[in-house]
Length: 293
Image: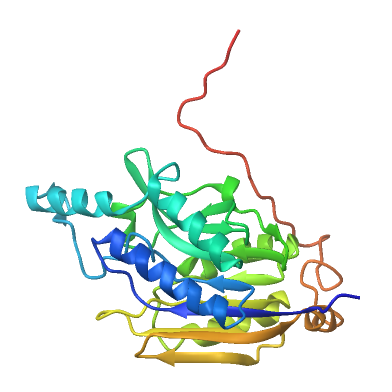
């Protein structure tokens, strides 16, 4: 039997807002550091590439927008990345060099709309999948579009089943249940939520899903960190750490998942499908559908 233990890492650092080339350099350096520490799965924060413009209002008021706000949005849009562009090619090359699996938050250009997205990379540098945030929170809805159920798939990677929900999606119990039903083993929670109450949320999810939770939080002048790694029994294996850049690592023994599900499997023996059921629409929601005769 192969060794069921892998080394996971979460990167706590911040974007260079409005300077994507510099942020990509930072991504390469930090990924290299995590790989040299032996990490086989590395999780970066929400919106790491493209940035999280905390405190900006983009000139919006009820019933009005300002020319300056539109200029600010243009600047933010220009800092985002397209998934067929040079930024992605550079990231794929960096991941292949590091030879480790990666989940990283980016701001994605989807046509003229921006999405808060988590990208999954296999260790050979292949883009294995993506997840677009379903529900931007509060003012985020001004600058980000809404994802749909077509990007909610857990990825089968060489370390196991890896899934991600972004920031306050983790407060959506039905979205979590969909992750559990897909057998997620390494539940990634990239975020910018730096409140101390975030940590017990991550512990709750780990216990509820009997999975490892890896939460990477940005650390900037306006975001204070709080990254952590949690076991399927809710034990803190690393972190939380606040107020500094850091790479946290922990050994993740997958046998703990089965041991935990012995008495709590919320989508198995601890479910009551005769009472509760969840229906998930995973079809892409396209505005225009062309039907041929």
